[in-house]
Length: 124
Figure: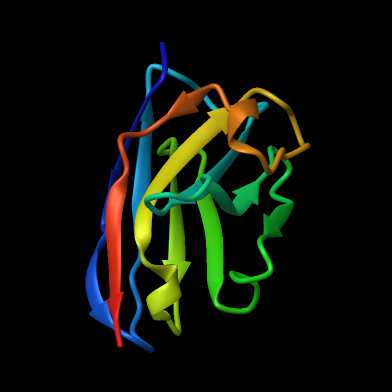
């Protein structure tokens, strides 16, 4: 049974940066897509960034050019470098994983393993 644990969220002012991380245990994510989702109260969980088994990345339109997803297969971890943050980036950020090889789904229901979330708050 895989466990994902996020850390590194926090509160920053607009234009600032954060780098949440996720450590995966009990699950070797070789052959998997891993990614980050954002949850805002009253709204559907939104895919932000994904990285496939081959390292190919996908980003939401709002994340392109500002966020960078990376993974360290040796450490079974992934990170999301978030730059030029905006108040609309505020939310609970979850890491997630699914055994889908190189292909990355963008909808939450297609992911098998989830972390507990880390809060990111951006003030104007």
